[in-house]
Every structure is written in structure tokens, then in C-alpha cells.
Image (tube, rainbow, N blue to C red):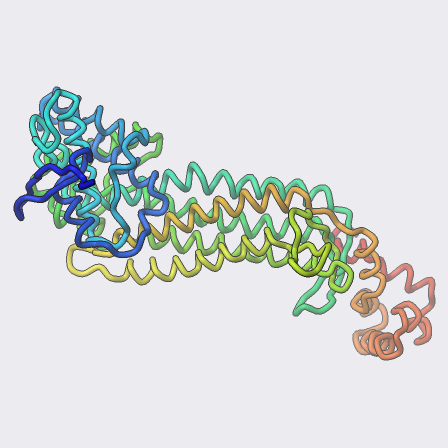
Length: 467
């Protein structure tokens, strides 16, 4: 059965639009001309919500400034609320790979909100009366400033609502584990070779510090995202917007979201470049690198468990092999590292796209937004999964750790201050070549057993400043 349509028009003429859809001519043209991939904005909900917030804030600001009457402002804000709350998500069908300014997504929002507003007073879809998508919903705006505002709002909300809570929860789990295992002394490793002793608590505390560095970077990058380009209009001059529109609209967004959004320091730069988004992407990559380190350490410490290092026990969540019965794999660590790899790739795309501002406009906005949001969402999901299904269940294998400490030749480092580096090295080589313990080799080289036991104390070696 043929789909019923209605005729809408734009500056290029008439367009057939599905009769029951709230979008209009420009959205329909985008569906026709940009059938590229299947990706909608990642994730769609934060972007649609941000579009609604921009349009609501704009209507309230324009009403306050006397640019729009109270009734139209009421109709627009009510329709924008439906967008913000997620009631109209199906009316936003566009993919990432569209115009580089995000014009079609901006017009998608204008059309949906205008049609919803007109529908509320009994006007037919496509009537554009009493609310016009361009003249009223888009009043004081251009896609060139509205879409960058959407980019910043969506990213700030995803960081605050998803990523930071998930990463901080994982961090707190690791803080607890560091305290719980503070007295477990294990052999350190550098260059993948045995090194001097370290406490497991110190190892995990190192992971926490690396995650903190990533979180600090994200928080610093977030500051630049609090600048909204609203009021810049087409090229940063503010043409066709009230002089106070940008300031009032940013204040409205701040009130609606609870985040301290403000006008940008330079309106031209806010359209032509996306340094704040590029910096945020780089910060997400830094956090991903820290999480990659944690995950790799966990799976190496848990390797084996009998023919590898086997010093950490990880939760046994699911069978690890379709052919080897009883096998358990470090799947949570693997998933987290794959997410980190994806974030690195996304950051490469963002960095290149952010470098492509020409004259007064960067036209890679949708792909920048898509990749930054994907990185933030994936990291949030991966942190939550790794926390719940791996980090919370981490436990040391005390016997295995103790055996490795006893067998390590690098305990000889504690002898060096007493007998000299060269003599200590000779003892270590002798022990290695003969398969002897370090204690046996030291005693055979003339070190008394009493002195060896007094000098070589792994617990003191792990905390030399406390002795």
C-alpha cells in the first residue's frame, strides 16, 4: 500500500513528505540526498535533546527581548519540551553524513517543532501558521551557530550524566582495592622482567592516579564546551539576531541544564573552529589510554592461571572457549581495551576534522560531534562493565605472589648497598645459572645467612621510605 503524503515546500519548490510525519521539506530532501551509512548521531537522544534545548532557550530569549510574541513563544517552548523529553525522537531520522554545518538537523528540529506547535492549535501539518520553522523557531539563529551550540550542550550532558559518574565509580572501586591489598607485597616488573618488590596496593593506587589524570583532562576540556555560539548567526557577526540574543539564550540554556553555559569569547572562532571539541576528544583519548593500561595490567597479572603470571584472580563470568572446557578468559579487560582502541580512532577523525575550518566555517561539525559522543558513551559503558564484572571481583592469589617474590633474583638489589653492585650482580648471575635460590647463592659467595635475612626483606623494599 502506498504511503500517504502531503505536499510541503521550501525555497526549491514542493516536496512530498509522509503525511503523518512532523518533519518538513528540508528534512525530506536530506533523506533523499544523504543516504550515506546508517549512523544517526551517536547517541541520538543527547543530540535531539540538545536541539530541543536550543530551540526552547531561543524562544524564551526572543520573547524576553520582544522579538516574538508570548503566544508563539508558548507554542514553541511546549513543542520543544516534547523534543527535550524524548516524545518525538522518531521524527529525527537524519544520518551523520549530511551537510557539514548540520543545517539539515537544525532544520529538522525547526520543522518538527513548528509542525507540533501548529498542530496544538488545530492547524494542519505543513501549514507553517501561526509558527514558521524559519521565521519563528529559528529566529535569531543560523545553523552555523545553533548546531555548534548543540554540539557543546550534548557533549557536556553526556560527560556529566554518563562518563564522569561511570569512570569515578570505577576509580572508587580501585581505591577500595588499593586499601584492601596494601599489605600484599609482590614482585615488581619493568621491561616485562622481574624488578624490585612493590605492594599490590601501590600498583592499584598507580592505576587510580592515571585515571585521575584522564578525568582531570576531561574536566579541563569541559570548560571550553561551556561556551555557546548562539548569537553568532551565519559568519560570527550576529546579523539578524538581537544584540543581546546570544547572552540571553546561553543564560536560558544554563538555567535549563544546570551547567554554566555562556557566550563565547569570540563569535567568529566559535563557528570557524572546534578546538573545544578537539580538546575534549584528546582528553577522552588520554582517559582511554589510562584505562587501557589498567585493563592490560589486569589481564597480564591474571594470565595463566597456571602457566602464566597468575597473581590476580578475576571473576569467571562466562565460558572462554568453544573447544577447551573450563577455560576462562579476561573478557572484560579485552572489551575495555577494544573500546580504548576505538576512542583512539575516533580522536584521529576528530583531530583531522577540527583542522578543516575554512574561512568562517568548519564544515565537519556532524562527524566531530558523532565521534566525540561515541567515545564518551563507549568509555562510560566500558567503565561501568569493567567495574561491575571485573574490578569489584579482583582478588590476589597470595600463594602465587609469595612464591614469585621468593624466587625473584631482583631481591639482590637490597644487597647492593652492603656488598656493592658488582658483587651483588655476580650473586644474581650465579643463582640464575645454577638454578639456586638467591639466598643460597649469597651464602655460597660469603654473605652470612643472618645478614642476608636482615638485609633482604621484601616488605621493607616495597616501602624504603618508611624504614
